[in-house]
Image (cartoon, rainbow, N blue to C red; front, top):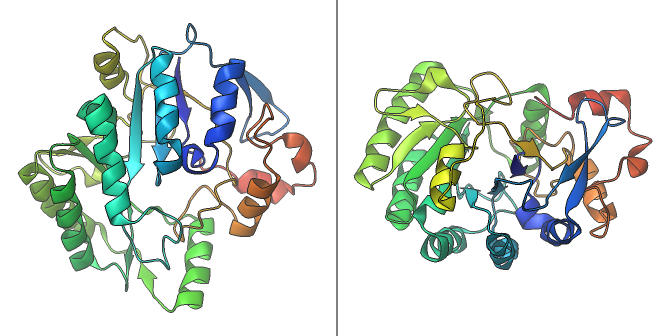
Length: 310
């Protein structure tokens, strides 16, 4: 079993203490995002876990906990998003210099295969037009050269809640945003691919196969092959994506939607930031759940329905 921590929330940035305590306990409890009354006990014992995938925008609070995972004798991969967008879009992410330092630290300590740079989602706005992305991507790719062999991109999926959150942020901060035609996205992907190759990286596209241009590939963010190489032993897992076009291997995610307080304007995993902040404040790092469904009994049917896109 591969454990994902987590594409539903940023466990390394905000819930590292809980994760470490659950490792010591040997298990955690996870609610079904479609039906929070359905609960699963997930073993975190070394004999039951083949590897871990960590997703984050700020690895800093979690760095020392990677040593704990390594001491379990199980491989891990860090999927770290570094986009360095303006504060109005991304108020809580690590700054460029700090994020680059974090990725370099993982590569130097655990090897460059242990970390993947994510430049996603790509959002088109008056603050981040195509020219911004080209210059920004070039700077970051140059800073990360030699420390990772892959960069994953995707374009912002404008779900109803995403549009609502972007509209609120744009009114608050005075920017505009758009979802341009596919031709512009394909053209940008082609140029980003050229930059990535120049800096020794493969470019892959996450869950959006229509934007794969010649020379790019479909992303496998949960990648049993990469984990096998890092761990030095084969990991038997089947391809089982989480949504259409997803190329991931099968995993169990231990996060919970509507719990990331970072406040990214384009987030798909948070219905409302005030809800996420409330859950973050009520989080119990000693608890079995990242956020206990017992604290969630007043949730509306609408909230439950919109909690997940998968």
